[in-house]
Amino acid sequence: GNSCVSDSSDSVISSGSDSDAQVYKVVLLGEHGVGKSSLARIFGGVEDSNDCEETGNTYDRSLVVDDEETSILLYDIWEQDNSQWLKDQCMRMGDAYIIVYSVTDKSSFEKASELRIQLRRARQSENIPIILVGNKSDLVRSREVSVDEGSACAVVFDCKFIETSASLHHNVRDLFEGIVRQIRLRKDSKEE
Ligand code: GDP
Ligand code: MG
Image 1 (cartoon, rainbow, N blue to C red):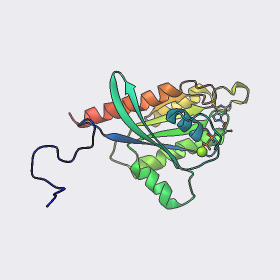
Image 2: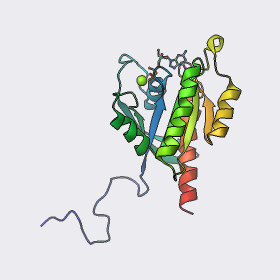
Image 3: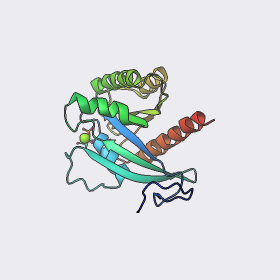
Image 4: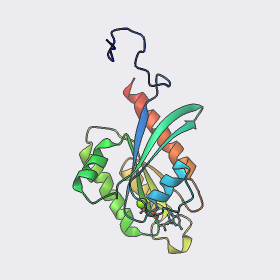
């Protein structure tokens, strides 16, 4: 008969790509309105935002960073519904996290700290890559959280920090390259 499971040492079950073709799941967290979907759409290369308020998107993309290709699945599903199940699922599923707040909204910054604490609780023994993102850096006049406050928070919470502007596409590429580098670092230190 036709066997799916073969004892042959050849690669009978082929994924159709490289042997090291792991896909990393990156989950966006953060309060409503901070710019998660805007950042995700830039990552996904779908900037024509007709469906602005659409929720629950996943973006699949490969990034070449430092001459090496990495596949990322970016989940913008945190606000898809209000179920605790989904929140728990989000906290469990990610290989890496992007926690977003708006520099124009102090309460979203406080929420980001809360999320960081929840994440630590959910994934205690794991050393998961996390980047704290202060988005909307273009809105200079309505800024409520300084760069120093943001980076100090990241130090306390032991994660990376970057300020972005989805509107101006400022630092967005750096953000996603940064998460890829973080993933590689943690992976390498695990495989030593
Ligand atoms: P989400 O609820 O976290 O997914 O946030 P959205 O991506 O839907 O963005 C909420 C609102 O903030 C939208 O009106 C965006 O156009 C706006 N927005 C997002 N990022 C930026 C940014 O970097 N600068 C400015 N000025 N507005 C932004
Ligand atoms: Mg959204």
